[in-house]
Image 1: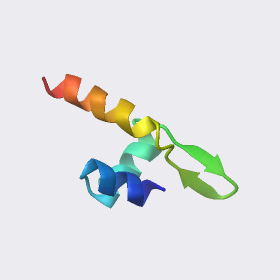
Image 2: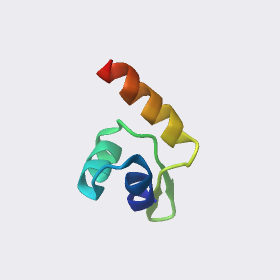
Image 3: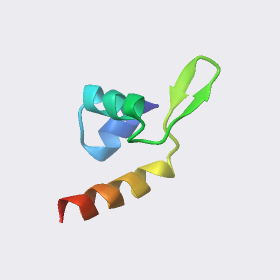
Length: 53
């Protein structure tokens, strides 16, 4: 869930939802729900660290 992903990454819920909607964060649709795979979080964090360096 995007809220849990936001908490684990230390970012706000709105920022997380915005990144999911723009495609900057991987997500999958399950029925009517949008989920962020747990294995996508380390990949995203690594990309963010490289971009900041």
